Length: 454
Image (cartoon, rainbow, N blue to C red; front, side):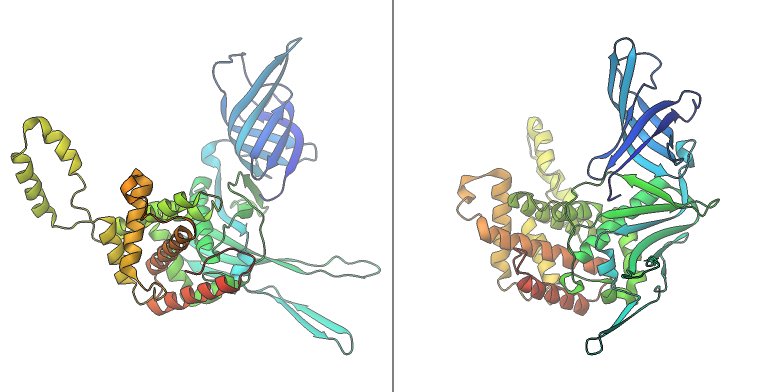
């Protein structure tokens, strides 16, 4: 997933094994996979329709079997005299297997090595004893025991550690021991890859919340029931950027911070995914786009807070029946020609305003957000700035935040959302407070990152 590769071989459509075409498969993590063929799978040169192929099989020059899934033609050219070349965008690459059809792409378990996963887990089997006086170094290594977490009725989450032992030479002048952490999803029976992909995404953003930096899948391996050989899985990853090492204390939380109740937290994260999907999308949209315009980040986070309040808390000011009666009375006295227009305007009139939503959330978490001294002023500035950025009303321009003040407020909104998400996965108030305070201290000492302490 995190490395480019090229495979030269022959390629064919799964239901047309006799029509084999030479070509090269190229994979670049940020751009995805492209199959360039010295020929075409077309039966006729119909240039008006883009050819879509569900499954393409490949056999490389070194004997590796490959399945290409969800392929779409990107170019098709006819060169004289009648020589064809074509290329296809490939959504998913499965290495070491041939799947015959889409419904066959199932796995018993899938393991993922994410960026920053090793630092987040913070469990090492390497023990180093260094004595500078006698110039002696003793290195002991034992593979840490795997961690198993039952989550759903038919699946579990696992964290396992993969060792890389040193090579042995006749003259040994170096020895390197490495360990990588993988987080896995294992079902009782085989499940389609589409289900795994959803769960990989949920694990990815859960880790991103904890790490406080974008997390990406670097290596994905699937296993089927009939074989112990790992199947390498590759697809395009978006918004990729260089990965730096992090200390666990720079994170919002690491595995060590939550291990005692990790099964509860991860289960809540998965169970509430559908309910909180708008909040996830808006919050992580900001985290994964560090170059987003500050105004857009601010608006995304405000919208995420509104979505959170709408999904989790009371989303009405009056009881529904009372509000309906109020609307009916208003419409009874409205001229017929304006009724439809007014009805549309009043459609969301029973929902709390942004001001009331913020006031409620800040009140709920008042024990945690001690860093916010003047809540009333903060709410006013957020509402005014949101209204100005949405409508660009000149009357609001002077009071609207900009520059460093907008940056500070945006960071506070981000922290507020993190508090909400930590609460939703089940962390106790005191635990959340400690984690937020620790994260703020880490911002102070992180001189390489221009982060603002809310």
